[in-house]
Image (cartoon, rainbow, N blue to C red; front, top):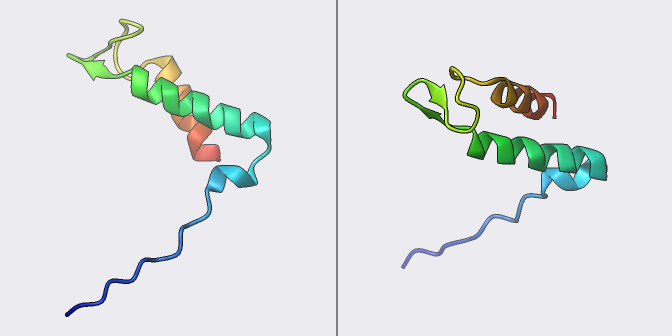
Length: 64
């Protein structure tokens, strides 16, 4: 019989940031989920992919 052990839960990284940065992170994630590419265009903006909103959201998350 194999014994399964569960790893301790990792701390949520966002808890380490001040409220303003947590909000920025949530906004960036939302934008990346909404602004998706279909046929080479952003479905929200209608411009060529990647749109400016997606690039800004990606940069914001990279900085965090």
